[in-house]
View 1 (cartoon, rainbow, N blue to C red):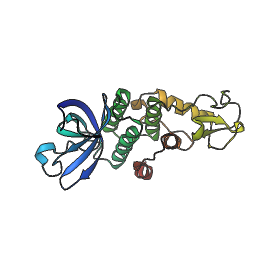
View 2 (tube, helix red, strand yellow):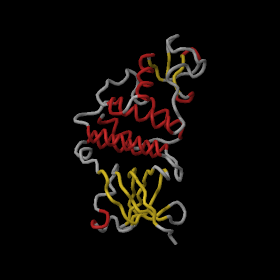
View 3 (cartoon, rainbow, N blue to C red):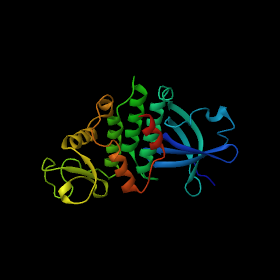
View 4 (cartoon, rainbow, N blue to C red):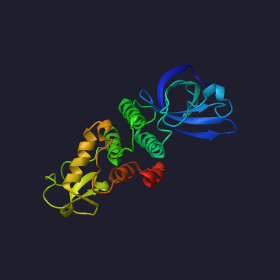
Length: 245
């Protein structure tokens, strides 16, 4: 039998229809990390949840622990609905990618306040942007999410010999965890020391300050590949974002 209800701050990071009328909602919370909850009659009664369970929405929810990994969602109050994101295809694709990205590195039943705050800021920045956002903002999000999850890429010196990057051609090698000299062995994505410095700067710079910055000259998906390698996961939303970014 489900336990007592608890109130949580949450962001919707995904959902899947269940049965004829229900929906399983995937949430990111600061106190419990990833939480999955069954919203009964969510597809049947607009009065109960309305559009509050849309992807990227920030909510206050009442959740009761259930059996196994699936909780019960009793109520959801909309805090921020990201209205300007839903009017723009590129913003929608970026928001979906942000939710899936952060959800991929967040842990279940473990506090994730930094990842929650990062995703909330990313969605707020997207909603407030008056034009297309630079791929560098998305790369900054990737770098920060990896760092907060303990997978921070090495960007300021060779991951193998730790010498400065200016000493010869360099590559980004995801299996090694970051940037290395080509002479230190193995292949990788070619980049310049300036590219590496820009990625390091994106890691340290607030997302709002990256919205209109030019991206690096190297592949714009090196940090995505880093995430896939070190988590063993890929992101379905990447294909749509790559087609419109």
